[in-house]
Length: 81
Image (cartoon, rainbow, N blue to C red):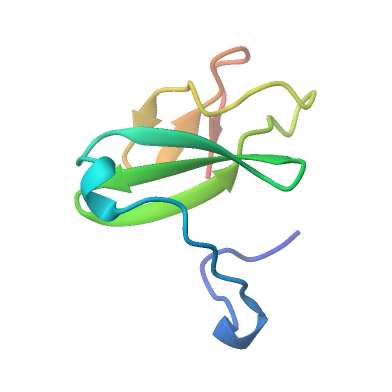
């Protein structure tokens, strides 16, 4: 399992998606990076990106409800970090 809380920045690829002004606080943006679905969240002015894939069965995750910095799977009701 990858530890998303501690990341070696030299191993990160940054991709320009959109101006920050296009993603207001509390909103999310769905994008495709190559063949990977990704959802980007603006939570209190901080930006987070996750794969838009549920770890339970590879279904979409990005429409889930945010609870703090966790997202609740819209199909399973389980909170994921």
